Image: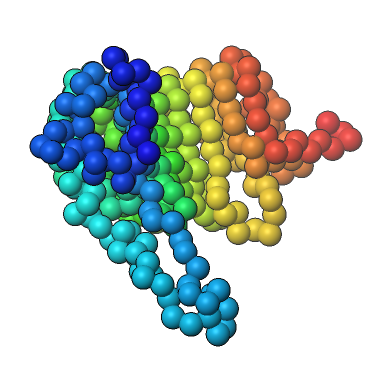
Length: 301
């Protein structure tokens, strides 16, 4: 489907995979049809799944004619690149959302930066059965360095080279808000967090938590301009639904005295293991929004 908010202004345009082929037909680019959009959402939904002939049971027979269509779609980098090349240039676009573009490459994001020179917000998201993005695809953003880009949201699992992705994002001169989901955190990985000094808002959701994950976040102490920080892990790997944030609070977060929002919804604090965590929280004098999973206090406290 496609949608625009007004026939005259076309300020907010939402386009799916099928309708984009129609809208760019007869030699017209998308922005010739919608000349001055402020925001653009491209959703590349895969074909709907269909049951095999015969009901799909053990004796269900052979698959229908659509069998393999989704697999073909998932590898269709040519289709994706065609979409980007057919969009045209629009200096009015300030917000762009690409959903389901798992084959997004460095060349494609470089094209985005060139096509939307006033882009302020970039949102990359996955879809069911199509929920990952190569970290290397973000490298071109740092090289192209869109001068207006202030917010990047990656709401899909990052695979491969998260370090290169973060280093590239650190080159964006005006980046103020960064939201990354599903970041791999290997024990040997060094996250260049200290280079993201322009950020005022940071949300990180890591794929797995291991024994020394918190130590890998020491670079956060350099981000003195942060006002909003969120940290979480997709898989804790401890048999528990919560993780201990005592070390992180005492050694890292207590240095971020400008924080007004701290969100660690699946963490806990326990005074027996980290007896001074209340003092560390007290150092965050500007904090007005705090989200924790649990706080455990002994009778002595």
